[in-house]
Length: 139
Image (cartoon, rainbow, N blue to C red; front, side, top):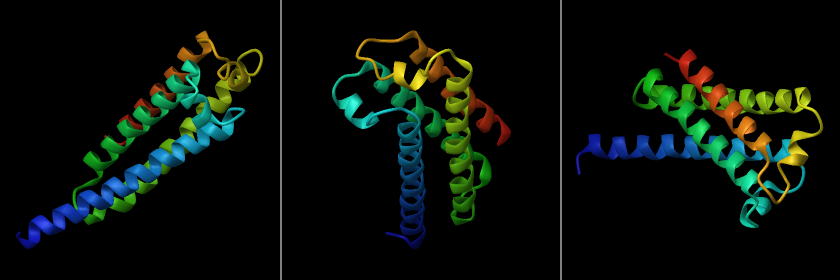
């Protein structure tokens, strides 16, 4: 293999590592904002937890894609991707928290119910909307 191929593989692994760390951080932030154990809820078949978790991960993936694409290739963009990924995590957490504040009752508790709750759609939507805002700001 050529040196450039080895370096590109190293960059792919580095960006993947940062990306996976951001996705895990996003999961833990949403987990902290909802009662109970979000991962356990997903495994036990809670549709609300699954939709919220999926929306969070897909949304952060979108933010990471834009961050990687628009901050430059190679090693120089890696730090920017980390920063913008963390901004995405923070803003998504804030978005969920604000949504929970402005809706009647405790949205997080409603999302831990065993049957699908309409608030799940709104919660997933806020995740996507925040991701689009963060992503658009990178262009």
